[in-house]
Length: 113
Length: 115
Image (cartoon, rainbow over all chains, first blue to last red; front, side):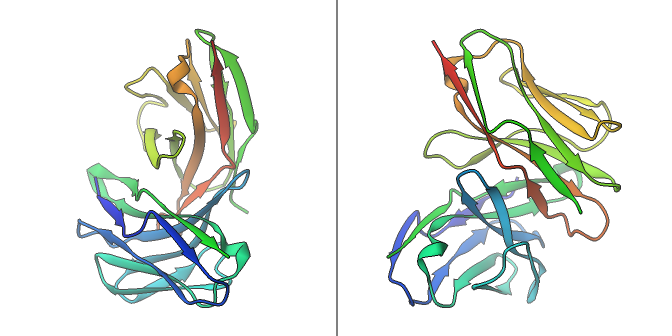
């Protein structure tokens, strides 16, 4: 399985700040994903990437952008943090072939004050 | 539109009772199906998955799920639950076609096992 590491477990940021959430995978896999998790809403896809410098919007991309300069690293960017972006953010990597499946990072709980 | 619905937001049961957590999806393309579990203050863990072959899949801790293509369902069952099964369970679907393998999740079901 892909191992996925998110750099921060908890973050507190101020409204209007630019926020970077980092995610690194330790395998040579093309597909990576950013989700946010909110009670009663499950996990919703923000952005995903299927190769270096390639990205696609998910279901709720507004207020977010992403960067994938190297295959192993996929960053989520909050251009100007707002209180409604307070949430749990989960990064995932996808393996293929016989090991088809998804591995999630442990999550970053972001609080915007 | 492709979507995933978990029919129960909360399921309370007593220890050693059977449980079923329901999941339905809407799609006309092929699917891969997953159940994830999230224990309090922990990350998502894969419980089981269906990719192909036998429509009945099992986990190592006694859960099983059956892919029913005609009903577009992937319900999760356990014949006898333990206190330690208390957690939130998520059904997820990877739809075929040009979805790049992205996962679509249900809203989650909180399973609470009472002594």
